[in-house]
Length: 178
Image (cartoon, rainbow, N blue to C red; front, side, top):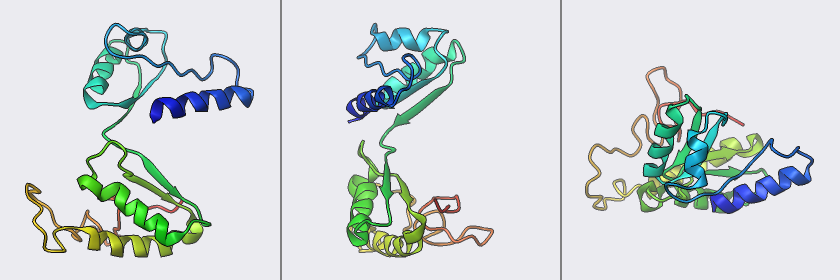
């Protein structure tokens, strides 16, 4: 729950000694709330928002009046973090479920994945193999309304881009090790 986690993060920042006013979390609901006042205020240096797409559009329009930078997290752009001491098979299973369940169209979709360097290659190999197996088109199931979709083609799981870089799960970008 983003509001709860942001509140906890603010509490931890204060406990760590961050001065008052450096990191602020303000919750508000709908038009005519504190959120609307903040998004329109020229004294606000940056706005971040996690939530629904239409609200993100409203915030962007309001912030544009003052050219205030905005960071939006809308439509389920959560990350999974896998450390070297994780149960690899379990982490792979849940990572695949997180991104592909309901065609990835859920608010808690794990569409970003960070894997510790020491297990990266082993994780990636299994993730790609199991991810391709998860694809309903590869299993011969009816996918309905998918349009242009091809599991395992460039820009999807597996394949290579025009420059020959091995593509795994990063769309049209090369994967990077963390």
